[in-house]
Image 1 (cartoon, rainbow, N blue to C red):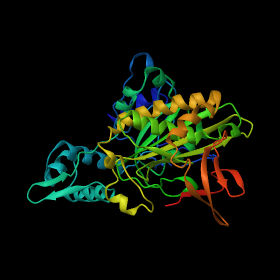
Image 2: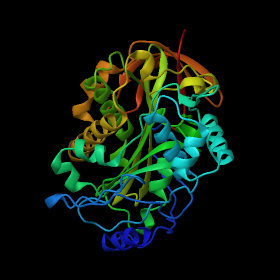
Image 3: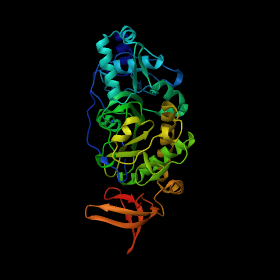
Image 4: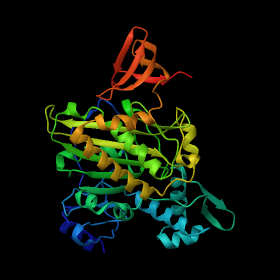
Length: 403
């Protein structure tokens, strides 16, 4: 089976399952916030097919989807991820499952099953042990599925995507794409992960997400213009994410400049944009979006007020949310590349939770009180101080609301 899969992957332009992507340096955008990559391993199995004129090849188990018939570097996958995913799926299929049954189904020893269960628990999965009956999940897992995401995308967008990858565990989805740019990463490539070991937000702050407890998604885009023309891109990405959640029935989501999705005064998600290329063009961006769905016990380990979609109501299916977010980002970024930030200003203002609020502008020398007045044409925050109004760039300060 593996030999047939390897042959088919080669026909699709994937050179081998052991390749490691190398990468160059990236530069952060003027306004930012999120991110994930893994170690290269053997491809365990794949369900690969072509679907008509879209020539969309799908490997649902490892989550690799090269679109438009383009060649693609094989994504790095974790060897330890395969038995963990298989175990989680088996637990999700039954109300209870004994250690012996799991060992037989997965071809493992009972000791190995126990170790894998403990590994899942350490990743934030709530697995109960029922005396005399075995293991059971407190809630069925909502794992991402590359086929489901691809099927939910508009056909025209499916044909344009360079790659759609769902990985089990990465350090950071942003990092995964950044490392592949120098190896010919296709434009409009998308990377998602079930878990991140080194997710990061603005200024390198860690971004925590339990296994399957959030959405970690990154999109790679190329631009012909200068790097300076991408000022405000993270605001557009944040707006696309907030509007996607509203379209999925999630009410009350706002935007906190420069990069946060917020609800009920707590952080729901964020955006991290990382730029590279020539100052005068061409250039590229990796746009990362992170959204909390079910934080569980991870909530206590987060060093700031945080909230998840489960607190606001039943979260949408993760694969459907991913597809709608990809489509919204693509639409918004295409428009932004053509006309800039201007047409988004009014929509952003409606969701701007800082506008008109007293704020503290934090910088290396201390802090200054002011009143937030919205964003300017570049995406900088306008703040009214006693001596007058000033435009604040996200790279130089942080902003806190007065409580």
